[in-house]
Length: 328
Image: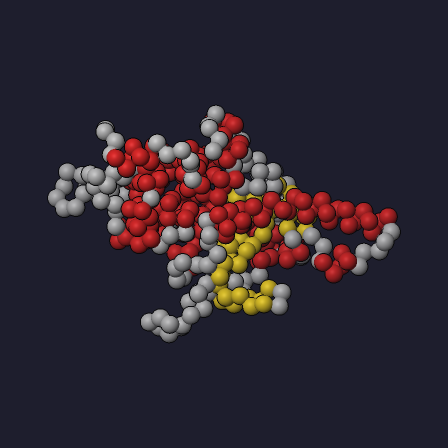
């Protein structure tokens, strides 16, 4: 197909922007065929029928990925397609022959994913792909949780805050929103389990839901003290490495035994640090610091998408080496 003037001009530019490099990474890293296979049985294709022709599944999936990676609304995603040649090339849209999918089309696609819990299947498919590459060893698990703020405004139809979100105190500050609890592979730092709750649910109550059953060791911070004594975890055959409470660690005596215990805490903290990397990608790279939708169900569906994409980026250097990709 002959290039348009804008495509020729874009192809001849001398500098690759960060957006160009980022989209090129996602394009190379994502197992597109595997992801499309999860959605295809539920995606209606009305090719050859009357009415407005459906947008191809490949394009809609790529458009959805753009939305998640750049933290865009449905309308913002539509505008981004018109504004950015990099996004148009990534999605595969030629404005000289067609229009970009509108916000309502993207909304309907999101609802399809939420209704059939397809984001969980996409998350599992990505992990299956990474496991086949030898990146999920499942010998150890690190558990942790992070707060995701929700809009506290009552300026809506009901005149109330989201009833499925709650407030929680962290340190001396109160936060309103939800929690994302994750279980991370201790070797690779990739997320293998995800549970979401309101912010007032204690971290330790979700420990059992974050274990896949094949690990032999579990690492956690001081918020999980006593997890091994809970009824649901008593029959779990793992070795627990839970951090000492800060006050107790500061009170360790200045003796050889005290120094040894402090060194053990340092070694446990080095392992636990890997659990912060997925949170960093989701909150900083994907700019997801606040919930976008009302209710836990919609936000949970989005969290599975975000952590699945975060796994791809965290595994980038391993996948590039394994597949012989061109590093950006």
